[in-house]
Image 1 (tube, rainbow, N blue to C red):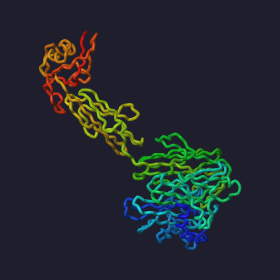
Image 2: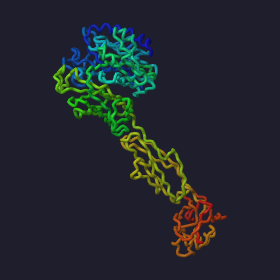
Image 3: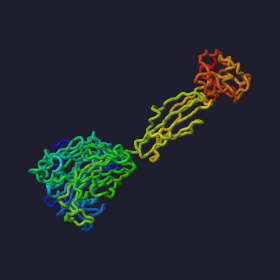
Image 4: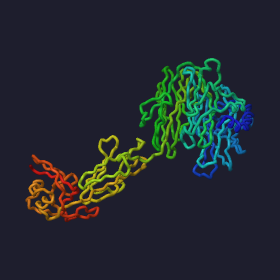
Length: 629
């Protein structure tokens, strides 16, 4: 968006603001305008909702609760903003239509700054065509800045040419920004913005200041760009206070533009930067790393030093602001920007130092980027200033209090995603084992949300004899799958699956491993003697008998359920063969030739690797023989 294009688009409606500027005394403090599709999932709908967050001078005569002459004091009250001498605020939709209805729902009342903050939502249905420039014009700014009692213009670009263009960026910042002469010459604060998609996508958002032609058309004074500048990539504003130590006197009114290239739209925010001429040091505000995050226990004096905080839908967050003042006779207070839906500010703890915590449980469907900003200010409790209008309890509006710069938590709320398996390392890993041999697999799944522990189960019944249980004392919540397949599993090959589920959000994922159990290659027959078996395997009946002390006689026959406990074999032996080696003194190991002819070769099904008439199963064609020297 170039300066000339923007100026050309808004110049036709500036005269409305100019005409109104002479009619009202100053009451406008701050404002931001944006729009979003009312039904974003319905691509055929062209209904949009305009949202204007605004701040007004509480003591102005026109700022009253609708239908009364009472000053607003409670969130939820409605103010009907009308103009002096019939000059109402006007929202022009850019398609030739406009409305003068501008009702404001009170969000909070801030008597310390003589300010009330509210929000206005206005629906409008567009016809074909576009894009359009929608503009809000009204009057007039409060006194004390370079454009005191002048007209106000907020504008936003509406583009409905594509279904994925669901809205403009939006800004939620502190209505009043204060810089201090006692601080460094160049001070910084953030224009916190996110796209309509809910994310602060810095690859699609850019920040700028309204061009001088915008202010000239309103007969307003443009901000001096040597005093105030904004970083186009981050939205960080740099404000140089050196001029205010010499010749500059008035506060600075600035209109910032946030553009989203993906939605071909932009929004604007009008803010006054107040220069505090009190040269005292004043308070310091810190952001405290919330619990259950990598920043827990740390404190940050600047939001640029603190990474974005990751939170999750339906899980609580606690964000604590702390402040201290070197003058311990001063009492510290906190102010915040408009908090996200459902967030609340807990009671302040302490006077100096002081703490205040924002507690927030984001609702389901509220994933996105949010900014919660706060300032700390000090007050002399012996002050004789009074509140105007009277509000109880009252913090006096005094010229000598000192405010910090706004400091913001950046929170990225994520939906509750399924756990991710990290062990086994590869999905669909495969294992091949022998019957009666142990298989052990470590199973681990992780969830980014540490408040939502992962439980691992088996979605179907495990094989007979298999178990799955957490490893006691394992800090990474690893589970152990154990299985020693019996002989009837020879030739078995199937997937064994595991399910990881978030124990609170109940979101799950599955991973499987492929397990195959080797089938028998050779076997001995029922009714054979030890001597016959020894001959087959190149041994002798004495050794066979010595290896099997449970046999009463070397002439015993091999019968069903009573096979030799030990055979000469390598570590592939299975079946009913005992895997322990005998304790023989002076034993040596020798590799023996393979028997030339098996007694019997079985063609078995996957679940009957050894028939009921067979003896022990053997896999290898080479066997390790133990014998006495």
